Image: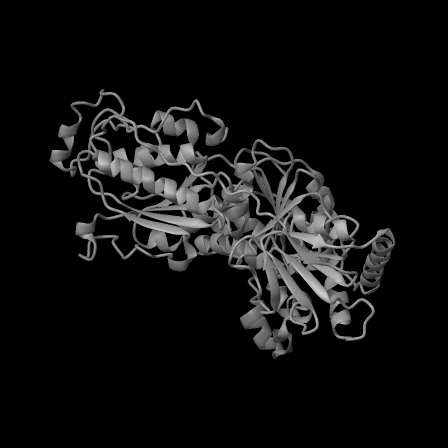
Length: 587
């Protein structure tokens, strides 16, 4: 579907023919506005108070613009929408829930969207103001629920019961425009619209999504507003705001002892900067910059050695930081926290990352203030080769889990998408993986394991018309934490997604932290947390095709074409088996 900006011939926003429900009238205008402003998909969880949003999706104009998905679990719905938004932030997804505790289950996705700067439109249905604070069923304080994690929020009063007034319809359109502008603006992120709806919650007259009849409990006064259902649609002004352009670059000093750090989401600018000035590139797996001749694979272990020696030949004097570094203590502490290293952060917003608190300069975009001649640039290239060679010599023996992670990494090619969970595996790849042409995505905003599978399914759904394959690489605890992300109803579109689970019966990551010195029994029970779960069996019971392999068999399994959701469980020793999917296919 083309951008609204590219469709000047598109009809203006109009009010629907009255439906006999002011709530449905308003919901139709909301969806029409969001669709014209760029929303292409929405994820809904079931509920009664949010029913007007469901009925409004049947409106002809809405159905042509917005594709709905349904999830029974609000947390899964939120992260599915987050995954869709990650695919193309210019077209963020909306997630909609009913009132009450359902709204709380979106918090983790909202927090991740906030810290990852991913647009997300959050719609929560609510009781009208006269029922708030009265003990009415499924009524709680939803206003300001997500507090500092949203770029914009509004509490919309419930429209008139029988028919939304022109003022109410203009208000919802204006609010939708402000929400989309904030979500996709200079500091993108989630926005929250809390929607008061009063009965009737279903259409009671011919119109968008009209039901055959109204519930017996419907307000009898709601049926008298259908007399002019066939009247011409009323035009509503819809405010559009152009998306911000790229900020102008600011010159920053570079020298032969400058390194480029590319954290999560850094993008190609970090790689281009390093290659233009022949500087070592320390790029995290999900940076979007991990490739090229300047990349230093294996930099974490080498950096620990370099920064431990003040006289080391490769010790940097300046670090130019793109994106959000999160993975390595050698980067975050030893390099960016060193007193003799000048830190320059490149970030287009006013909330730049600076965990070490040592940024001397922050700029929205960077160009190197560099007067190096060809001889100096050649010397820098030689220095980069010294970095690369030293990192290779510092390589450590690989465990079977690392071998599994590398098999997935190496199988990912141009046009593919690789989603990484927050576990030891992403750190394994940071240390051992080379460059890649695949798009690599991870929830590194908060580095949590919440909703990882659901996020990957949303990303795969959004990419259904694109070439390439989508794979998710997670540890066993991450997989278990989001088993509900595999639940997709039989009437819903199922994404094509390979979920690779490296199952070593617990959280290996804690063995690499200071907790490794804890007594073995304490470490195992309270940190490693072995689970003893048959993950392949659990996934199969939720409708996924499953396969169990060892590391040596993984590459062959990944090369086998698959459709739908396939869960490949990797263990140290082969317990090879397959499951039969819902459609009778054997993997």
